[in-house]
Amino acid sequence: MYARLGAVSQEEAEAWLRKEQTRIDNELEQGTQRNFAIAARKYLEDCERRKVRTLELIAYHITLALPYIGTKPLEAVHTGSLQTFCDSRINDDGVTPTTVNRTLEVVRSILNKAARVWRQENGLPWLVSAPLIEMLDETPRLPYPLAWEEQSRLFGELPAHLELMALFAVNTGLRDDNVCGLKWDWERYIPELKRSVFIIPAAEFKGNRQHVAILNDVAWKVVESCRGIHSDYVFTYRNEKKSLPANRVDTMNNTGWQKARSRVNLSQVRVHDLRHTFGQRLREAGVANEDRAVLMGHATSNMSEHYATPTISRLIEMSNLVTKTRDAMTLLRVVNGN
Image 1: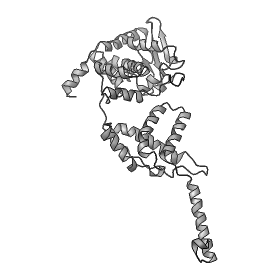
Image 2 (image 1 turned 180 degrees about the horizontal axis):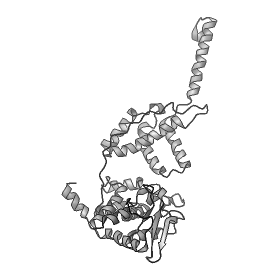
Image 3 (image 1 turned 90 degrees about the vertical axis):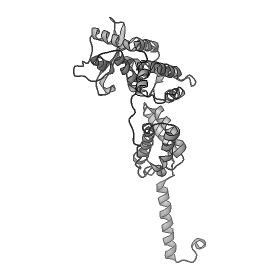
Image 4 (image 1 turned 45 degrees about the vertical axis):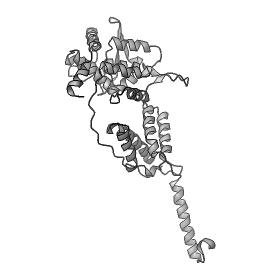
């Protein structure tokens, strides 16, 4: 103590000791400084344990952010430290602010968990308080119904399981979560038509309404090709390299989809545009508004929960008309200058 403080009184030495003890206690309370990569790994582990359906998509967004903020302490991650990431994604990768915001939302969720849920051994949070991660201003992207030639190019680049799912979506108009979560338990076979429909429960359909998914000839063939592969879900993926059993697909908007659309210069096409394509082709085929609303699952004042066999037969006929349309969207884009 003499070597460090020099000639001091007993009172001064004791004051220095108390100060040092306080400093050490504060450092212990703060715990080991954790960086964003450590927090991101824990977040993924939590999502995997809770069987979060979008785990693969969350991991994809984390992979995008790690090169920019992975080594930063949690306290140093904020809107300012994410600016380089945002600029690079928009200027270099050519994505929209909406796409960037999806990654920012994942970063924000991780920081919120670190501040509000995760605790150190001493009971203190990983992060004293979560900063406000500001979202970028978004300009809503217009729907992009696919022309037949574009569909052919895109689907030809998709992995086999995604190609089946995309083909089903573009022939039924179902949203991503309903295609991925489609269950065999929802299937209802109609002997008179030798065809099934799928009754999607209200809890699983947007708007909390039950929806009867009509299958045209193409969608029916897709379903038949998937029969017997999985006991619960219609659409699954099996990793052949890891010799794992077939499992539910969390989202069609995964790396396979994103790489495929980039390879054919259709990066502007979203999974939801498959639904827009179905709706556009119904209009091109002259299907009446009321029938389009039923096929698309839109709410109508006289919509019934179930449909009689003749009604389903007529809806199947209407749905089959989409396969007879040809490249009207290509002409429309030329007229609009797009």
